[in-house]
Image 1 (cartoon, one colour):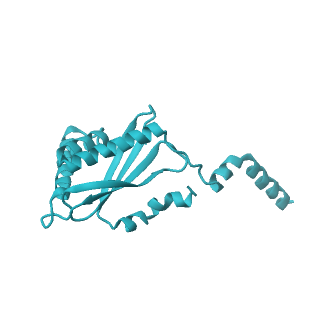
Image 2 (cartoon, rainbow, N blue to C red):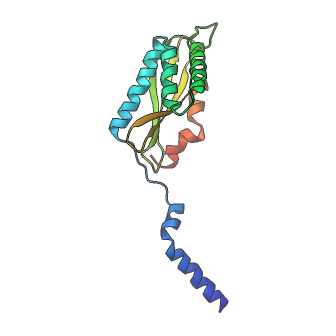
Image 3 (cartoon, rainbow, N blue to C red):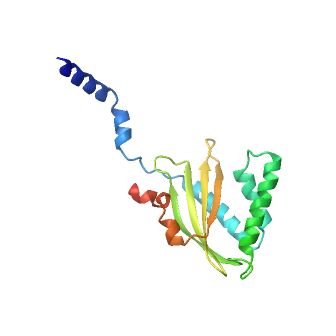
Length: 177
């Protein structure tokens, strides 16, 4: 008698929460941000690369802090501008003083959005320098008001094949995109 009641209870719970079970078992649906927002993101990245090619590290640093650090206090913003500027200046140092040097161009190597949302996506680029390439990752957030914001900007000196083989870069393969 107890087994029958337990089975009835389990079945009743399973039927009462089908959306919860489905959410646990289904893959998120692939959603993408609007073409206009992705285009705006491309333009933002292109502006950063144009400034890098022109050696305008301070302009890049100020723009990054304006976007990424919108909520930072004034002291933190000044510190971060200086940090970004010094790191970008190091990138622009020609060999043998630096590892990279003057940028000659760049290519988009990956565009992706998080499965299940059209509010967060990334663009991954490779920039070519006189000494070595760099991989760049820009992450964008579509705010509730529909405006685009750069939420993160990173660069890596890893081998591009190594960088692209990390788990988060393989995410879309998992979701069948």
